[in-house]
Image 1 (spheres, rainbow, N blue to C red):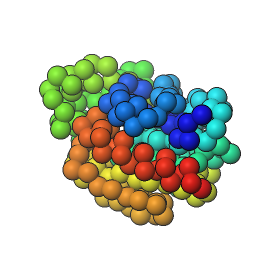
Image 2: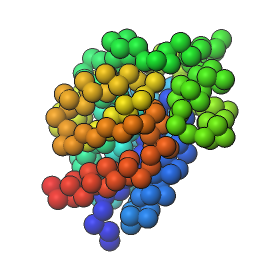
Image 3: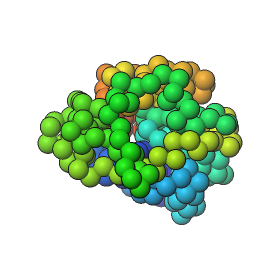
Length: 232
């Protein structure tokens, strides 16, 4: 049996589990054998937290939850499970009780706010021709093209879903700020990370897609969190 916890990776808006591809490879190289990337429906916070809880329940031992972007709200809502050892936020929302990703966004609008477009079915997209500059300006044009074409739009109403009991008030946490983020204002990331009482906060000169542009650094933070969680 490995002494490393299971790592459950939770993606955000406009992407899927495959956004973690490079981090998964980095973690595997570090000896992690129990890595799981949840595929969220992005239909409501309740649906997404429910899907994540099911993944957590499938693990036999301790679990380290890692959330990117909106995935941070999901792990905040779903993370108060007995076998969750810690929470890692990657350029992510970490709302308090009664807060929503949309409400936090309004406090400091991100640079790319104008590049979001709703469709007639209630889904919210990043305009494909604006995806590279908005979400992942530090990736190659080819990588950005694939992300833009395969983006998974959330129901816009999900932005307004509020947290009930934030798991970060009970579980240890770690946070990575992206200083060049255009999807979540860095000011919001700084404020959220400060109030977590996180064991460690790092800042990367990265876009919102730090998990893809700086996977080694992101995986190193996850590894540090996993090692410290295992000692608790």
